[in-house]
Image (cartoon, rainbow, N blue to C red):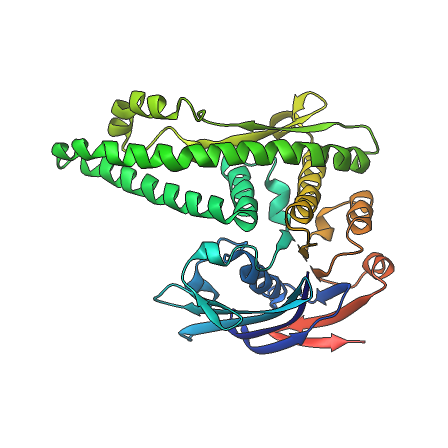
Length: 361
């Protein structure tokens, strides 16, 4: 998989931008708040249909404008692909692939695969379950259109059930309609639980040798899925929690409360791991993400590294760089240090300054 070019119009602080890309590494350097991360955000948006910053569409449109446009030309299995995205302030974004508008998100999934690694990802291990669920769902949604559909349907049913729980205070007779939303939650939730379990099981096998290499053989890292409820017991647990949910006005049972653990040499790295161990575990997870995309799609994903080198020590930097030499990589950094120059022989360098990008020789 390979991105040939990108065009941005009124995206973030870029009024008009066209960039052509080659193989190897593309390094964007400059001071903070100049637009480096915005470039990677646009490329990731063209892959995952969402921002890695959790930004809304209207927040990515240049100030004072009503719309923004992203065009990405890519090569997948020797087939050229054109991706067009129109971001609109007051409407859903429009997406077209090779000039054909897409009506459903699931039809876009897998068009372009990208893995992004940013300083925030180093918090996946130490922060709360929401960060780990977000990682799992983002990856599964890129790899499995059916999961995407089930996930969207589950979220809609959860929103409706929570709205109903709040409305019951004003109209208790609405309680009779709760069965409908319980059935929807269980229908889609059981599929989500099963696929998350299979994903974490597969990821466990991939991450083990990666982490052993990163830690010099000193650490063994295992991942375990921690579902809030099992597929078989979901319906009964939901019914049992109904009175409590009515009192609390929110749904307390379901995969929206799942987690997964990082067991490092038999201790829970989320709680007892040192900062270095937590960072190494997060790095192992992102490297395993690259491997699982390759395995599932048969293609090497695009890699986006957003100012991550400043957060890693030299040994972790070296392990990361040695593992991505065959991947088209987009890197942001504040300065071109000797370390990056030594490891990327095939590279294109750009200076980013106040929404302008200049190619450097």
